[in-house]
Image (cartoon, rainbow, N blue to C red; front, side):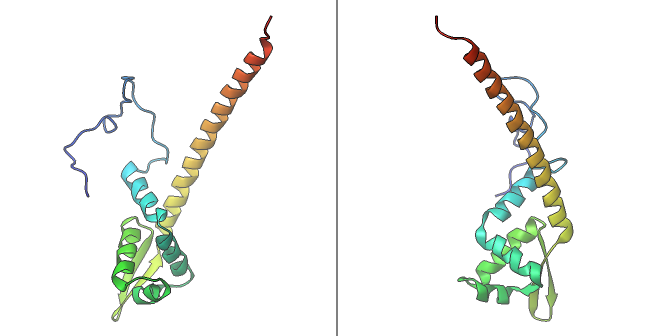
Length: 145
C-alpha cells in the first residue's frame, strides 16, 4: 500500500528518537530508501530470485516461466510485476507472449548500492570490534586485589 506523502514520521525528518540530532545518512549511496525497500522486497522471495536467474540465461515468456514453477501464470505475472517495479527486469511483447529479461542497468544499480551497504556495515563491524577489543584490554589490566 502506498504511503501517504503528507504523513510525516520521525524518520522522514532525519531525527533519531530521543536524541534531537540528525540521523546519519542512510547506507546505499544516493539510492532512496523506498528504492532499497523495493529491491529487498523483490529479492526476498526465492521464486523471484529463481525467475531472475532463469531469465538471465535467455529471455523467457511468462507462460514458460509458469511451467517451471508449481504456480499459475497469474501468480508468475505477479512475481514478474514485483521484479519489474523494482527495476530488475523488463518485459516486452512478442506476438502473444510477454517476454521477461533482466535489466542490466537496474542490476548494476543494485550491485553498486549493495556494495556500498557492505562497505558501510564492514566499517561499523570494524568499529565495534575495536571498541570491544579495547574494552577487553582495559578489563584485563585490572585485576582483583
